[in-house]
Amino acid sequence: MKELIILGSTGSIGTQSLEVAKAQNIRVRALTAGSNHKLLEEQARQFKPDVVALSDISAAKQLKIALGDTDIKVLSGEEGIIEAATYKGETVLSSIVGIAGLRPTLAAIECGKNIALANKETMVTGGTIVNKLAKEKGVKILPVDSEHSAIFQSLQGALEGSLKKILLTASGGPFFNKTREELKNVTAKDALKHPNWSMGAKITIDSATLMNKGLEVIEAVHLFGVKASDIEVLVHRQSIVHSGVEFSDGAVIAQLGTPDMKIPIQYALTYPERGVKFENLDLFKIGTLTFEKPDLDTFRCLPLCIEAINKGGLYPTAVNGANEESVRLFLEGKIGFLQIAELNEKAMEKAVNKTDYTVEDIFEADLQARETVLKACGII
Ligand code: NAD
Ligand code: MG
Image (cartoon, rainbow, N blue to C red; front, side):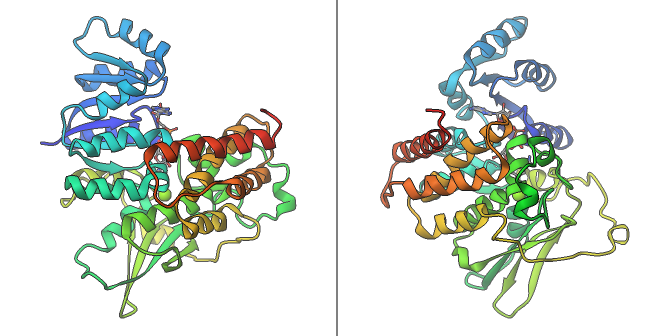
């Protein structure tokens, strides 16, 4: 039986991971979250981990009082999250949102744990360092992101050098086929209505801007060792074909399924074995599968991410950091939808690149990009 640590257990991926852990009878050793002490308390009482941690110090104090009648150790702050990430258990499910996931994920790899990776921003910002460390420590990075899990599943049994192209599917989000004019005044409420997936707020906005697909192109470059030019993005409105690969002989293998994150989460936790069925895929009910080219003139974040990974170095960190900030401002109603891409582009222009960089350089570049966004909006 596996032992598991979940980083970001109160989120969309985190809660679904706990459902999978329950279905698979996996022992949960540690759980962490940002500030939701109420839900973390409930999870702790149900799953009985040895350790829990909250990055928010005052929320952790409340949790400590609430769990006073148990033996569960309560930790706080980023150090607390890192301590939990390196606690007993061979696998860490990394599902914190944003670059905040990078340090705890690196710490878990450092102590030899396999990573089930949902937190794509870790790969986007630290992909080179993560891959190097994982190789050194002999740990596996198993993708949880549905597209990357589909690519990984399609590659099972493939010979080295046979992969020619990655077919990365995108739902197109709630604003598919909209013009820039129509997008000028859309609100966070409109953008949060995703047609197929139920996810955290940040990734839902990223799906609406196609930034999510851009981050996924960068993630795929690091996970599968391909160039961005070997990745084709296809808008597939039904979210049934989760992605695929084309081999040297033109054969295409793809993975299909219902849009349910429990499938890729479970595969990352049971690999190479397959787990239980949560839902049935009824292709007769779906009937038609369609594929279209993305509109790169309207949804600027996607080409911007491709530019960032082609330039390399700290550019992906800059575009990611700017985006985390601009999405936050959009969710708070402080900027318009189209400004997200504009601000991300500005941060890319101002970014100072380095090719040989450390984790500290990544956080410095992230901070600079965020400052560029805040200055451009007159907030600082
Ligand atoms: P979410 O917002 O629902 O959950 C995020 C989790 O991280 C929560 O538990 C939150 O408490 C915790 N957290 C936030 N900030 C933190 C911090 N500073 N320190 C420690 N913990 C913190 O997000 P989500 O939708 O579950 O997404 C998580 C990650 O998985 C993201 O990187 C996202 O891109 C990726 N992902 C999500 C989905 C999905 O279906 N939701 C699919 C593919 C990939
Ligand atoms: Mg995805």
